[in-house]
Image 1 (tube, rainbow, N blue to C red):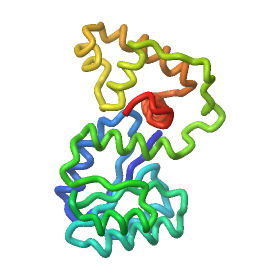
Image 2: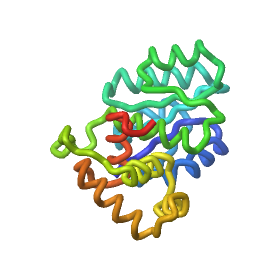
Image 3: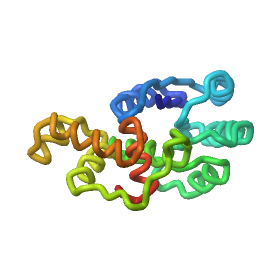
Image 4: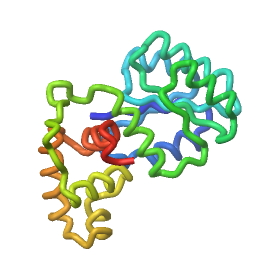
Length: 198
């Protein structure tokens, strides 16, 4: 189960991110807080796999919230989002412990990729992490994995590849077995970590 915690003072931003992320493979719960103090309290009570922190309008508080959260919880996976051309904020976010920086206008596939890459830095299922170096994915399995990384459903992947949805599911099951993972989120994380997908 993958959980996401969004921290931003604007309801429209929180709702927009929730809509965009609710169909990301493997995401089971999305929670919200408005301010940095709430963020630290909520995280200490119920840690999330990925934390999204907004910086625009309240740049110091967003960056400070990130710094304090990561300082108290070094394992926290924080993505900061803000203006696309604000190099100083990007540098400050990374210096404060953020794993990455997202533009306000990031597309849904970019959000999916950012979350997947962030999860790829965290042990998902330690006992089953290893991948036999001799394992090779077929072209179809690679195409299915790429589709998963873009947040597409089995039906959407099937339509793009001219395959029946049941056939896509079969490729997905074989893919999970080869990668020794349980679900889409883990498969995508493995894919990014092993540079199978970009």
